[in-house]
Image (cartoon, rainbow, N blue to C red):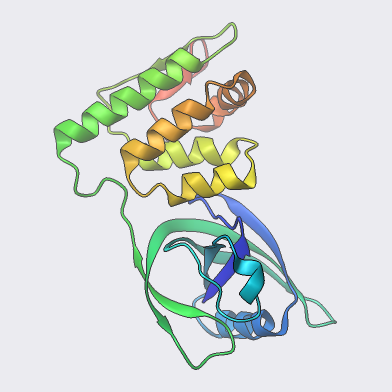
Length: 215
């Protein structure tokens, strides 16, 4: 199922609360509950207002998520929370349903990258984060450890207070080098850099810490 939204985005790893109220999306929720609990959040492209109740154009990259909280209200509306799982690209849209559906090809971050390129990109990201860390503590990292660049980039981006348009740009960045550069550009903002530093202690799955903090 596709759920198109203005400036819609779902970054892998984040939680997205939604209120479902339109009749076609109430039907979508029935199918989701009867199925695997998966929804793809799609971004409506400019001009969508002219065909909102039809099939307005959407971006090809979507955020695929699983429903982790689901409350069906007495009036038929639903309050749900999606957990972002992956990015995907829309293949063929399927017909004969009251809501939009499509086949989606999931993307595996960096799965085809040469080990040397993966190492270079990981080092570039970690060094960039360290240069942008502000405050009394220094960011310490280990470039020899295996690093999932995509997950770390998404984890930090998802924790920043970004505009809807910027969140869309992050979600649409399928290629890892592009996504890393978008994130590092955002962290040039001192407020974003401060937020990044504040979440470092929670990133215990990654090879970085603040100097003096426990491993």
